[in-house]
Figure (cartoon, rainbow, N blue to C red):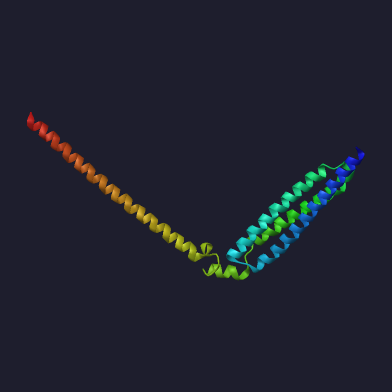
Length: 176
């Protein structure tokens, strides 16, 4: 029974080391990708950000599994491993902060190009906003025309009904 407990502890420790290796690899790759963001713009930048966010979710999942594994170990073995997990969680939080800063910043040339309507992100540029406003105005004008036509049809129908009603009353009076 002591041998089985020792074997289970060794397996858990090996599993923790595997999770640790997975996390370190994912963390290093993510850090490298964050560094590449400065050189990218437009769709390539958005794709890389999405890829980084996926990597961060995977790293977070590995940390959760690592934390569960540490909690399953005896107290004397889990203490030093809990400290490692805590370090990795701080590292992950730092990576998330770096990604947020990188996502919020725009390369210097992109900011100027976007202001002139020449940037890779046309939808957020002045020209893109103007085009959306013109499209919305055209839709409103079409809707207004449809409403005006509806009002005109309604008034014609009312006049027609009133004329028929008057004729019916006139005919009824003529009969009496």
